[in-house]
Length: 348
Ligand code: IDC
Image (tube, rainbow, N blue to C red; front, top):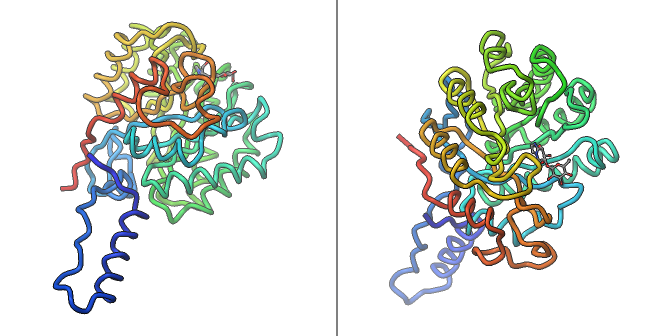
C-alpha cells in the first residue's frame, strides 16, 4: 500500500482548488490522485478490547514498527529523512520513542528530554504513525525508584497531547530486580496520573524479569494472571531476543497470549546484548505467532550503532539517505521486509 502524508494530500487539494479558481476556460480541474490513508487516519483512537488492541471500529489490529535507540545517544538517527523512510519506505505503523531515565537520559535534564519527546511525537503524528512513548528505565530496575520523575514527565506529555489519537504510554520499559507486586503497585499509581489528563490513552506496562513475563526471574506469567493490575485499557509488555530467548520464553508468551493483553515493545533477532549473530529462524517463529494473535511489536533499534541489532550500517545517520536495503545491516534488511508487508486494518 502506498502511503502519502496528509501534507501532500492537502497540497494537491489546494492545488486543485487554486487551479479551479484561476482557470476560467478549461473544462475541469485536475482530480487529486486517490490517496491511501495512514495507519492513524484509518485506525484512529485505539482501545484495549479483551486481550486485543482494537481500532476505532472495534476491530483487533496488529501494529508493527521500530524503536529508536536511546535518544540521548542516537537522536541523529531520528530526523526528517529517516522518519520519512520509516513512514513511506518501511511503511511502519508505530514509532517507539526510547527515552532512557538514567545513563545520561531524562534525569540529567528533564526539560530538554521532555521537549525532545514532544518533538518526536509531532514528527510521528505528521506522518500518520502511532507514537509509543517509552519510559526507558533499566538501571535501577525497580520503576518505583523513578516514580516522582515518571509522574512529572507523563503529566506533561499526556496534557500536551491528550487531543491526539495516536499516543501510547509505556510507563516501564524493563522492570528487573523487583517483584511483580512492586510493578503492579507502580502501575496502579501511574495509570490514574495519565488518565487524569488523557482519559482514553492506552497504557503499556513492562512485566517482571526485563519484560519476560517473569521468566528471567525464574517466575512465570501466573504471577500476573493471578494478580492482575487493577485498571482498564492497558496492556502488558513482553520482550525477546531471538538468539537468547528460546522455547521457555516462547512457551510463556504463547500461554499468556490468550489470557492477558500483550504488546511486544522490544525484540531483537540477535542476543540480549543487542549484538551477535542473528537467529532469523527463531525470530520468524515468534513473528508468525504474533501475527496469528494480532500482537503488535516494535523492533530494537532504529540507529546506526555498531551492534548487529542497530538496523543501519555505521555512519548512515550522519547523512540523509535512509531509503531501501543498501543502507541496512542484515537485521535491518530482514526487519524492513517484515514491516512493509500490507497491513490488515478492518474498517467495518
Ligand atoms: C542496550 C543498547 C546499548 C546500551 C545498553 C545499556 O543497545 O547501546 O549500552 O542497552 O543501556 C534491552 C534494553 C535495551 C538494550 C537492549 C540490548 O531494553 O536498553 O539496549 N536490550 O541489550 N533489553 C534486552 C536487550
